[in-house]
Length: 309
Image 1 (spheres, one colour):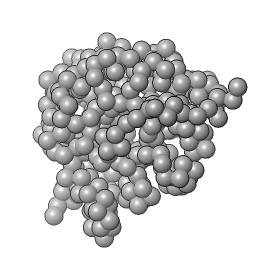
Image 2: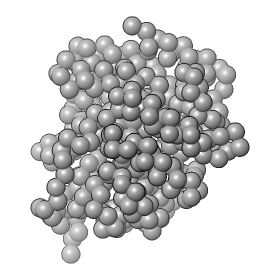
Image 3: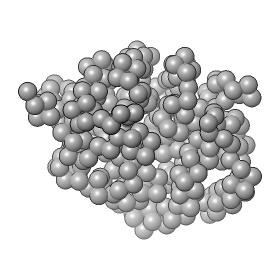
């Protein structure tokens, strides 16, 4: 049987407006002793929601999910869902090197009340499309929670082509959304073309935000909401209203910050930026290291420019 041609169960339903707009990626704060700073995490979730985020997505690359123990991962997931308290949807990153680990995390997130999960296939050995399909299918079978399929070859070692992504979304129940982070705008256009604009895709590459909204992205998954929340929200609102003159202006004002935090590594640069804005999220976890003084000075300058009116 060719699993890639399986048709999705027509009874699967989901509100098309539930996941949209600015999907904020919180860092995972650490205390001085290296443990997860639960108080700071709760404060950060409140801060992102109060600043206008439409959804929260903990435990992605920005949240240093790969560097947490399983007990820490579960605690961060539970706190994030609890603290959001249904004020906005929560999309928990459940990626793991093993299928069993990703299944376990998806079940945990669903049981705790996550509105969706985000799944990035992660590879040590190069995975075939059939292996990726079975990995995603196994997670989908484990829970009815909507799944955001995440493509980020720079961090995962897996690059899913648009044709394969669309086949998976069409075939696997509850895989309903795609986060595209390759930095190639043509991937987004191709997903829209192949699906006749039925599949909701989300921009995961900060410097492509303007182009992604012009291409029809439903939302922007971004760590920049930690640092310049008003600016990223204004960009989304202008693009949604079709006011691309305003969208271009606010995008180019914030673009140097978007480029800097991506190039410098999101956990490192976002934690440095939060510190500059008066929020202590601690240092990133080794092997990541804190931003240098030179980087902090440059980031401070760029933030001042982005925040200037």
